[in-house]
Length: 364
Ligand SMILES: [Zn+2]
Ligand SMILES: [Zn+2]
Image 1 (cartoon, rainbow, N blue to C red):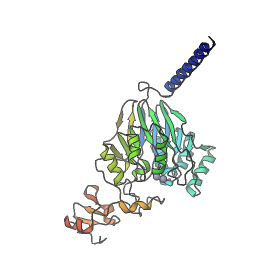
Image 2: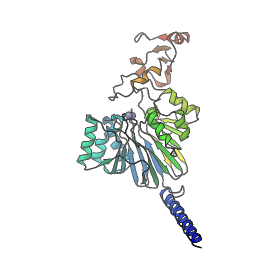
Image 3: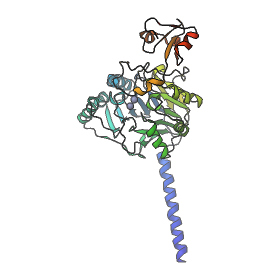
């Protein structure tokens, strides 16, 4: 009799745990029917990242591009009627992500500031700390697994769960879900960090993938993409950026997986609107599949990121109109109209065989 009673008690106990877990789960994720409208604005900030997410009356900003873009982002937010941010997430302390933060921190009211656990010892970083101090704001590194609400949307922190010796890998990664629509952000996390993220086997599936590290080939492996299975990828990068973002290999991976790609260097600011069930875009996906070309000389970039990418990009740039070809650094490439520009990875002889003549200025 006693054992039956004991068993009954433990069954009741287990059932109550299951029920309370279910209730908790249901209260955390609003159903598609209850979801408010969520807008994700991938702001065109040249080479860098800045994404505004609005849900109902609530707003958050993910990264702030470089220092020259702080005021432009502030104006963008102003036009969107935003005076207050529930969250400011600075994925990692590289200049193209935190440079504009002092302006935003100074001008807007902010509830919570989330940062990577990677600290830097340079002017850009010190300016951020100073701005936070002035506003008496304390930035924290959010814990992996922590959840936050933005209106009806739920943010789940995915990384970093340890320290890295490279700022990109230490990026704060998170998923934001509104109803059934999921958006994944991984900052500039590269292969190693993305692999570790995968090994924890969280549910990374997302409708929209904010392409890691500006579409660089150091992020987004096949395995990672397989886990995310996005319908759309958004690449935030600057037109003619010196790093060669986005990389041909990454674009090919998107293309062969049938993923629609949006890019700020071609389409300007991109807005995805989620009603909890469907996502609509303010523009059509890119059709160029044009890879970036690293030059190492773009003055819009003060941060030295990845010179190692130089080797695999376009060898020459052809002008389909004048039938001349140039080295990627040639001044006339910058003036060339996009529709005449063709990036090739052929040898000099192969291009000449196609009827092109070498430019007389850059002597390719
Ligand atoms: Zn970056
Ligand atoms: Zn970075």
